[in-house]
Length: 206
Image (cartoon, rainbow, N blue to C red; front, side):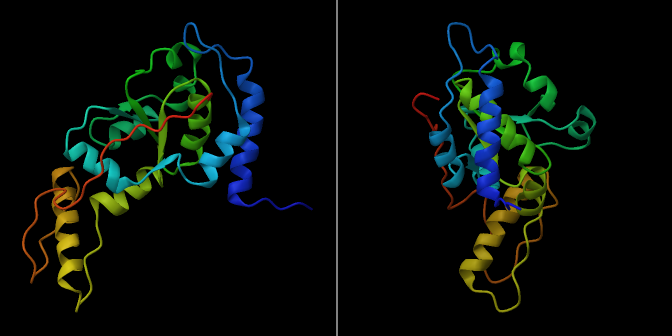
């Protein structure tokens, strides 16, 4: 029996989806460009993913070069979603008519509850010529890491306390629980001391 590891599964899914995508229409005037080796490289190097903290900083900085897309159900979206995200459930997102309307001048950030379905959608979008990323860990990671940062333990250094205060301020700004600033460190504004410039990831021929 052959056992596949996570990275190998991702590459296998890419190969299977590539065969499917060969028959799908792309943007007007374009065709799907599927390059398994290049997609596999991006997956194994995790270049397809965006950390929740980076996305939080983009939102705090009001960057205009991205669009977050929530691929969960409409009901889950209504129950809670990332600020500025639009709801496009997976089946709707992958309709050829929807793919053609995605903004060509923005990086699409896909997220579900986890990241497996978003990763599958990413493969389709990349092959369709759409600049896209997957939110690492999905909404689960966003809630855990951004909206509910873990308080530092007793005896934490000033740097650890400062980082926590920054994270707590960002959480409050983005609608999370936030937290009372930890003692022995200065208060922080959302995103202070953290820079994550928006760089669009381009892939030649895909």
